[in-house]
Amino acid sequence: MFYSHEMVALLQQLRLPIQSEFGVRIRLADPDLLLSLGDIGHRSRNPFTRNTITKLMRLAEIPYASSVDTTEHAAQTRSTEITYRGQKISKQATPTAEPAQAKHSKQIYRGQVVVR
Image 1 (cartoon, rainbow, N blue to C red):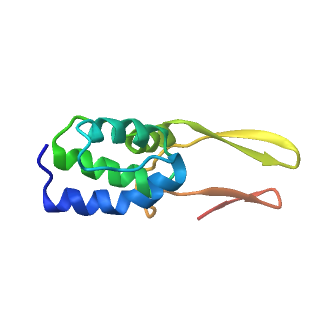
Image 2 (cartoon, rainbow, N blue to C red; image 1 turned 180 degrees about the vertical axis):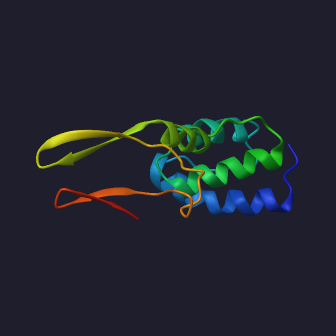
């Protein structure tokens, strides 16, 4: 495969993190380099490595579903658990599209309803 200047620069940035995390050396002469990097990108815990591999796959025009994209989508739709005084409380994480000025919050203070 022919690597562009940008792709070689990204591969140079990936050499040390991949070597330290997986013990695998990146060699440009390897014909299956991009396929193995795609597999490593899914297993990696380092966000820099995952993002850089995603950029590399886009430059190589290889279809790649990064775990970064799927985790961001899952984070928006999943509920979060918070431990409060020893009890786990689940809250549904929902992105709000309403402006803060249009929303009126109702609070109760000493038994009286206060509208802000």
